[in-house]
Length: 257
Image (cartoon, rainbow, N blue to C red; front, side, top):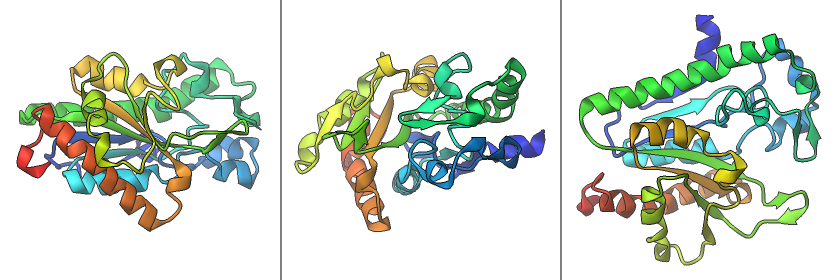
């Protein structure tokens, strides 16, 4: 069991003391052998349905810029989406946009429980442990989750390039949106292309709201993340929004903004 739990997540810069903890739930498209590829072909396993391309690379760069710890998922969200609670159908989806997932079509309660136990529970516990560790240090911080999304959804183009998402606590999102004038070339929107009604704020609610941490979910259109240069540029742009936003909330010295 310990070996399986270790495969569910990776912690980077665990001792970072910067003004944030970063989470990237959908960092990997890895499907452990015990799930027999979920019946998917290579194209489906490589697609956005299985992970968030570019999200981890940007999260790593942003973590370095902010000296922030990062927790990244190491198992495909098609096995278990760690941004969903166990009772959500989308936690182990049988369909993702136009892609059917045969290995999720007829899961038993035992099958579902095994995935909760070996994927969701260790990932969630790791986040809780890291937040507790940071709180014990006594320095205030925010919670940031990093995601990417497709430029087309069921064939419909999405114009938004950077989504700033929040649930009931909009402190950090509001502060970031107040800084969008710094990136006039970007289409930046609130709660787009998803919002709380789409069930995408589980991590924010579980780890942000329950700990009274300013929190935000960042969504990046993945056609803007196709090269390492793209990823570096996006991380710099996000830092341009986040540094003054964090300073406004008293989480970072204004001189660093």
